[in-house]
Amino acid sequence: MRANIDFKNYNDSDYEALCSFLIALNENDDRHINWNWARLEWMIEHPEFDKSLKNSIGLWTVDGKIVGAAIYDMYFGEGFCGVLPEYIDLYKAVLEYACKELRDDSGFGLAICDENADELEMAKSLGFIPSDQDETIMERSLSDSLEAELPDGLKLFCPDPVKDAYDLQWLFWQGFDHGEDKAEFEREEEIVPRVRKHFNKDLGVAAVNEKGEMVACCLLWYMAGTDYVYVEPVCTLPAYRGKGIAKALIFEAFRRAKNLGATRAYVISDMEFYERLGFRKKHHYSFFWKKDVK
Image: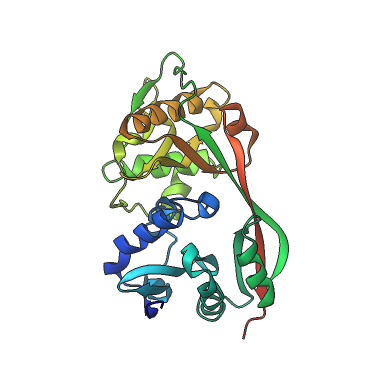
């Protein structure tokens, strides 16, 4: 006889348990790897994440252990719903909660792995319809060659997200094509050091030029007890692209993670760039939306 399932709204004391749930969800079957503990940790300290809404996250527990969760993805209106495999019949209730409590004015949407037939069926039964939006997870073994060198004139650097917060955000601003106007950057960006509990800064690597300026960066996420790393984000200043810098940084980060026990890496992308680095498409996710939720 199954134990009673309890519901609660998320609070900060549930953070470790929620990370553990996402790790358990992907432990033997990685079809939910697009949502993992690292994505949660990156998102929940992102400057655009509204922490005042965190208690809208729904958690389903058995004897204090999280077995299901409904999490919004940065903004209301899109998110993740998941349950441990032995509680798949709970998935419909998790979806119903998300539709009611995590919706925006136009409804609620989420990505479901094309291979998760039970989840697809339940979503469709609730009126979710597919859209053209999709998401791809790529995977790379860390047992393959990881040899790559930085171009001359550049050196490796391990950025500290707290001490180097300004320089990192300035790099991301330029690397994600917002331009080179530092005055605009300082007007638009609030420089707030982000303290992420499980982030290992020794796995984050950057390249600095002769002036000591960061020109590219790769951050990597690894949790002891798992066998994978998650790549997020990778960026290079426009003037430094096409020189093999990102490859050298990614492979250096992989070598460090491999020494800690990681055997594979994941990235949310379908870019040819990652294929050239040895990544292969692993799972495809289709987005489903339920519009005009009342």
